[in-house]
Length: 543
Ligand code: TEU
Ligand code: CA
Image (tube, rainbow, N blue to C red):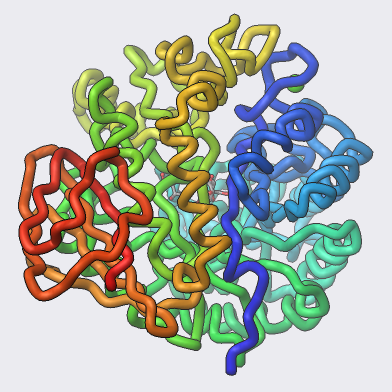
């Protein structure tokens, strides 16, 4: 019998600290601000907080470029406040999951400052350096953020590898000294009583650049098994790897308990379904809903006891899901948000809620590139201008898929700057914050917030949600997502209309005993001919 883990029964809330709550009026969210808002998270009912990076950083990539893993970013506060956050969260039975970014560091990390001094420097091989080939980069590996993945360092006349920005040099994981440094740092954090790690692009640490292998390299799992043995394997913690290319077979390699690697992974197969295959994320097409259902069902049915699903729509890199696949009009924003939440949170796996998702935040369009912040966006803007795209085409793409959409400060109330800050926010809030804010949501018993709270409550009180089996119904239906969850003789049926157009579900053989949750107050129990209105999502207990 597979041992039951706390993180299988948990709901995780992701905080992007820069945009969560500012406590000192500098317009930047901080640790003290998170401490001040823990009661809100306890009310929502979450069990763990995934904290995007809070370590010292020059913020070239908003904290995903770390210059000191064991000190807190100046704008976010102090190590004492970090310790206070861990303690205050623990009082509320909330664990803190740290963001582990060890594929690369900042170019301001002491290791890189040393490494670039000379080819003989003892830290040189902490990173990946190559001689020019015919005066050019060693090969045509590309950075995720555009351009070559190789940057010439003129002092020592060698190129260093950076799969992300030029200021995020990749660590050389084949160097045992690098591994020792990382184990030491991870144990520093584990000894503080954190609840685990989210592991940034962890599928890349096994890269073999000379063979242009980046993800899923030959030594990747050996590194992770060693990491488990040397650090978190001695603790009862959650470890979730960000693995963009994972298939279910690959996911089992990371999360099969027998392999002693990770608890689970973030896979992104559903996230790519409105992107044109082989093109960049900015090149979108209409979502193929049948494929979305097929991908969910594949993942629900594939892992068995050899792994565990993560469940998410949003994070700090993704556009807001209601704008992307729901309906962010005034009329349907919350209705479609409740539908999206229902179909995700009643699946088998650990759900992750990204800050603001629970009140139905939506994308914030920009009019010009001056309103953007994200390095990925700036690089894409320049690259596409050079390729001849019009400014309007580029701004449209940024408004659809840009990461700033997820990074707008969280509006807490209808006061100045949404109660996020008493100063000037580092990035403007969504202009509708006077209506769309936490206080308004908490004041409305029918708000999306309370729908999330009910979904979490169902997970906490009904073992079927965590442990039940999954079976999809009507996979060919072009508008309905229908699935069963069964456990110890009990059966639930989730029926959701993914679209605005009314549709019918027919299930003449079965009776519904009760409606456990719906996003309409007058949903029908009659399955023989069930009319589903715009985005109507109902959870039935069957007789
Ligand atoms: O993201 C990994 C990653 O590949 C994303 O950058 C993704 O390709 C892109 O955001 C799609 O829009 C992780 C972090 O989540 C991201 O915030 C960092 O920028 C990146 O790694 C580098 O650390
Ligand atoms: Ca602040």
